[in-house]
Image (cartoon, rainbow, N blue to C red):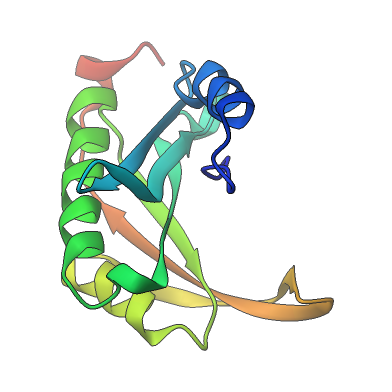
Length: 145
């Protein structure tokens, strides 16, 4: 997933917008009082992963605890399931981020497991938790097999 640029200069904005919503990507800015304060979106897999998306988000700390990300998550995941007929949306969260885990759980995601040594954060190899939300689909109605 491509992240919303910071600082959000005019050049960065043009570059992000030009790449943000390609056929296999949907990304949105989170705007409060006319100012971008976060980003949310997903990348859809290709070929045999075409019904799966990897979901991610961020929100400036000033806006934490206000329900903004929970509502944005609901809207964007609903959009992904409806618009792209996804069967699975997955998200990766660091174990030390319980607020992000709560956002996902509140929106019907389930913890699937721990991916050990799956990411590098602040120069260290760390674990990630994988959460997913599943929707049953009929492939005969949505795509050619």
